[in-house]
Length: 417
Ligand code: PMP
Image (cartoon, rainbow, N blue to C red; front, side, top):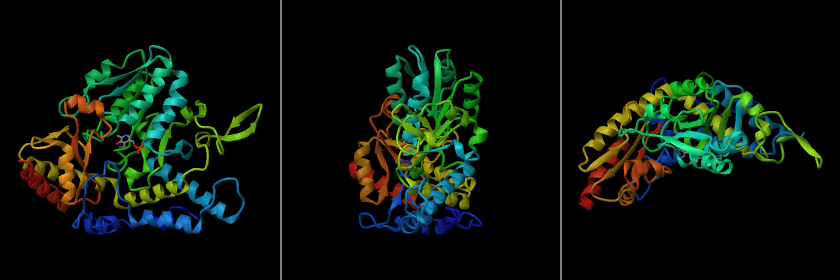
């Protein structure tokens, strides 16, 4: 039985927002006694009925531990779990052996830092990042750099939020051992020119990791064609469950790496004299995995495939233009991050109040946004702000959400003026 079949949604003929929205029960949840405008999608996305059903179906009808056991339920769980790996690999155009299941983008990046980079890192080596990285794509590299006497270097960001490619190239030196950057910035919405960047890094014979946490739900992605050595993302930002994610890695990279975590499933044989390792990707999947997480992500991919990522991208782009115009109508509001071709993330500050107070006032009006540094403290420093308010879009947002945001911002301004 194919694990992903129960969750498959028929493709809509065109972008049917009302129908799409009806797939997400939580969007009808009243908040503060009124309508919810959920604009915190960069933090996490809501889950469609089909994902909820896939999770429920798994626990009701297939729950068991995967691999090894011979009984019927264990076989059902294993088929569903490994079927999910097939589905995920096919969705991104890569081989199943290249899909390592993780707890999320953060764990995927740590895996590469510790299992791939650390053993190859020497004193004086450099890891090239950019100023717009999430802490998850900074701190793991700092940790391994400190152990090896290496250091982290970050390329500049322009005033509009674009990566300064000249600076990035200048910092790509003979000391560079690995290059890592976000596909899409979670704070600015900047979409990096990843195809060209991967080619440039690989032309120097260097490995490249892309943090895809903010990209996978918003634009079509063929990982084989992109050709990065490593690409990490989380299921929960892609309409799937929390606590689950994927590290894509080229097979030859995985084969050349030693395990990171030890435990069940990642071994071929164990004795007190020494142990040998399972084949890839299992070599990197120690312990009982998040079985429902994999099944939930496969269901989420079926869901977005049913709508079409091209359609989602076009819808969100139209919404971003509308949102930008609406925010421009609010006096004293300054957008941070205006790079051409950016994704549906709007970070801003207002001259009347601190972002935290604006966020709280918006919440009172049913608008869910995020405030703070968004785990990008170096970027806050770069733009000279302690925090921003961030509204971030998803496939189920519409003009009504943006109108609610705009109205709430005007009211908030009057409140603090
Ligand atoms: N990178 C980026 C760009 C992100 O936006 C996030 C989540 N905010 C992460 C990494 C980390 O994702 P997770 O917490 O799901 O591991």
